Image 1 (cartoon, helix red, strand yellow):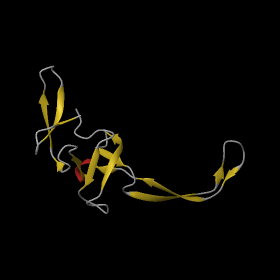
Image 2 (tube, helix red, strand yellow):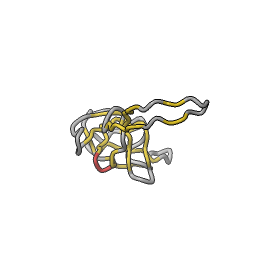
Image 3 (cartoon, helix red, strand yellow):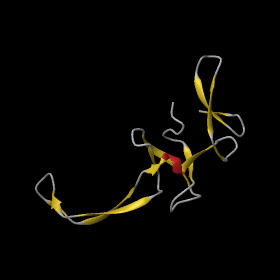
Image 4 (tube, one colour):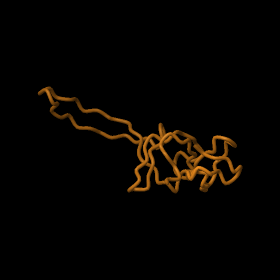
Length: 108
C-alpha cells in the first residue's frame, strides 16, 4: 500500500515550491516520484517539426509539471489539515487503511 495516492493533497517540504500545497495528479511508483498539479513547473523548448497530416508544427515553449521526489512531499490530513506522517491500521473487516499519526483519523 502506498503512503501517497492520486488525488491526495500534499505539502511540498523542499525545493523551489516549499510550503505550497497541491493535489497529486500522478504517482510514479517505480521512480518514487509524484506529479503535483501546478507545482514544480518547468519549460520545454520544442523545435518546429512535421505533424501527422504533413503540416509543420511551429516552434514553441511548453510549460509542464515535473515530478517531485516522494521524500520532498508530505501528506496533508483531511481531518486536522496539517502535514502528517502516515501509519497503517487493519480494520475489523480485514481492510488495511492509512492513518494520520497526529489525530489517528483514517485517511480514505
